[in-house]
Every structure is written in structure tokens, then in C-alpha cells.
Image 1 (cartoon, rainbow, N blue to C red):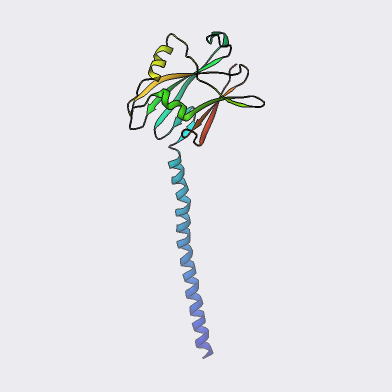
Image 2: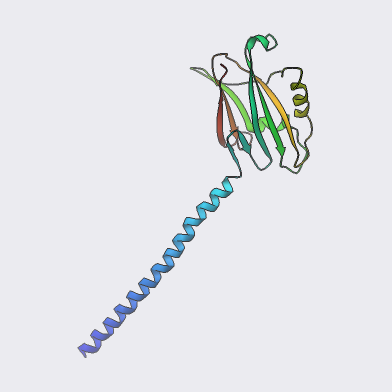
Length: 184
């Protein structure tokens, strides 16, 4: 009788041991699935970004191609330098949109002092070529899928402080990145 009980316990132990081994292979499969999911999420998140001077959102792509500093003495007697940002705007939305209306939804320029962070105001672009054509396209309605090259100008508040361009996912949205523009 003791032998039958012992054999039964041994058989049950072997069965449970095999079942436990079989269970661990299912868990490792689940672990693989869980580790693959974040990679897919990262790929989805990469559709909205600001890197290497390129902002990409669901509605547009803005690629900064040049930043030019206009010295204070050439900035319509305002006494402060200006920065002219030339960029390519691609409309990825379903509606016609003008670059001048879209830019401020995603880009903010500021200057920092010891006590403040000040948002810069847009300024008057220089006249003559190539600026006249660039300013003209900034107000044009760009069709879905269309790309234009345009510019925007900002007046600096201080000639000796760098300007920080901050890109966001949308108006007042998540910060995607920054670019520092030195005035000197």
C-alpha cells in the first residue's frame, strides 16, 4: 500500500513538474510580445518630432533651411537685431493652409535674461530679393501635399542674448525640441 501511495505521489510530482516547465514557455512567449509592443509604440511616436531642424506633425512638415541675423543698424531703425528664418513648409492636412498661419501654432521664439523669459514678436522682413518672394509665399494658401519655401522674421529684444526656438506638437502642446540661434 505504501508503495502505491509513493508511486502515485511520484507520478503527480512528475506531472506537476512537466506542467510547470510547459507553463514557462508560454510565459516567455508573453514576455516577447510585451517587449515588442514598446518598439511599435516608439515607431508611432516618431511621426511627431523636431530634430535636425525639421518639425514633423500630422498636419505639416517645417524644415528650417537658413537663419540669418539682420544687424540692429539694418533693422528699420529698431535698434535691435532681427532673425530671418527661411523654411520649407509642406501641408500634410486636408485643407489649404498658409505658412504664416501655421508657423505660430508650432514654433515660439524667446530670449532669456537673468530674471525673465520673453517671447519675441514677429518683425518686418527685409525687402528686395529673395525676401519679397519668400514673404509672398508665406501668405499663400498651400494645397494639401504642396510644399513652398518661405520666411518669417522676429525682432530680438536683446542684442547680446541668444534666441531659443521651441517647437511644440501643437499650440500650447508638448515640447518637441529646441534650437539655439546665436546673434553674434
